[in-house]
Image (tube, rainbow, N blue to C red):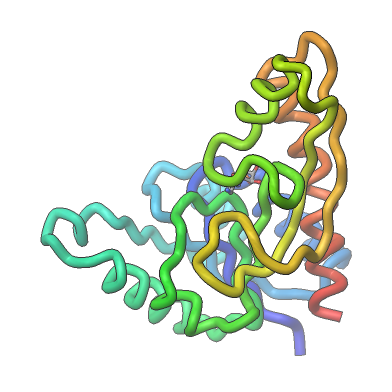
Length: 197
Ligand code: GAR
């Protein structure tokens, strides 16, 4: 049976698109069971729609407005994702940090993509943080990693794959992001292929 993936996104979904394309061309023997976004306008939801994949919008704001806890949101999100019985939960640009309420439902089944090397630049601004460090002469490359998410640490966990990406003089956020995304699209698909066997 094909491995079932649930892909969680917050934005453009170019990495989701890489997975969609790999599945469509037979490069990844998997089924994308659902795409979940915490942002309504995330273009990734449109990519899912075009590919005929169920897309779900699940925002945190109503929970905040109702003074419901983050743990409740995460538990309800886990229930929503569980409806699709995924073998793997893939965080492809998902910009929330999980609590145990989510992670304990998918032990060692959550895979995160992050645009930096292990131990460097966790969080939502990894590309800008790397550019700033380059500007200070501290680094000459950044990178990409794919890792398991065993617990609530941010952008940390057993590393499944990593690849360095050079930073060049004159790089802007856009030029470096483009180079990083090209590596991400390949590395994420390769890593998922190894994971699902
Ligand atoms: C990717 O660069 C991914 O590594 C990053 O969000 C981007 C999503 O791009 N994730 C993180 O920064 C996680 N901390 P996409 O929506 O085009 O796939």
